[in-house]
Each structure stands twice: as C-alpha cells, then as structure tokens.
Image 1: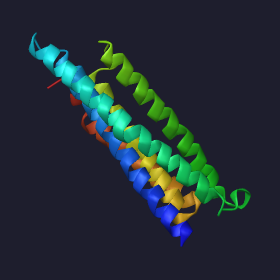
Image 2: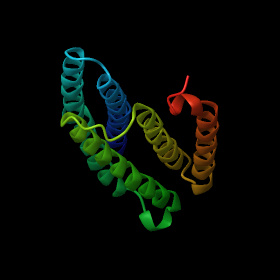
Image 3: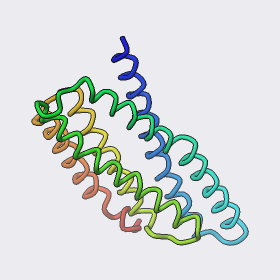
Length: 175
C-alpha cells in the first residue's frame, strides 16, 4: 500500500512540475512580447509577468520538482536499477529535464532584470522541449522498455520537425 501511495504522490508531483514548466515558458513569451509595447503599458506588463513568474516558480514549479524527486528516490528502493535498462533511459531524460528546469530559472532571472535572452519565437520552440521530455519519461516508465520509449521520442521529434517546417515563417516573425 505504501508503494502505491508514494507512486500516486510521485505522479501528482510530476503533473504539477510539468504544468509549471509549460506555463512558465508561456509567461516568458508574454514577458518578452511586452517589451515591444510602449510605456507605461510595457512597465505594467513586465512587472506583472515578473511577479506571476516568480510566484509560479517558487509556489508550484520548484516545490513540485522537489516532491517528484523525493518520491522518485523513494520509489527507487523498490526497483532493481541494474536490471532495468528503461530506468537508465529515464535517468538520462531526467538529467535533461533538470537542465531544462534550471535553464528556465535562469531565463526568468534574466527577464526579471530587464534582459531579453530569447525572442518570443525562440521561446515558443523552446517550450516544446518539455513536451518531448514528458513523452520520453512517461513512455519509458509505463512501457518499461527502451525501444517503446525511443519510438515515442522519435515520433515526437518527427512531429516537431514537421510543425517547425510548417510554421517556419511564423517562427521567423514573418506574416
């Protein structure tokens, strides 16, 4: 019973963590676009997006990451790591997820200081990184096979490439 409760809390933490990551980058997009507005609208919007991003980051995204990490570590006590190749893939994807998480934190700090490290189009594409990682992590954990997770990641990557080609003019800021 303890295992199922910890697993449920782990999934809840994961959902909250990804919700925070998806939304934080949307806020970064809006924040970046607010810089193109005239004063005083620009000042009001950037202050509001800075506040919203800070509250989301500290109130949901970081606590959810910590909850997911703690419960995931607890769940590892039930899993033979050396005999689970799918878990190695999941760890690799988790390393990328942590890098993405902390990079989002860096972007938020830069935006709060008035810098624009990326264009809104670049941030729109960057927002899809979390989706790619989510697909790989979930398929690895649910299927418990490397091949299924890799097929899912490949499908996700191909879909992303097709969408980028289809929307390339919009990503470049052209009508």
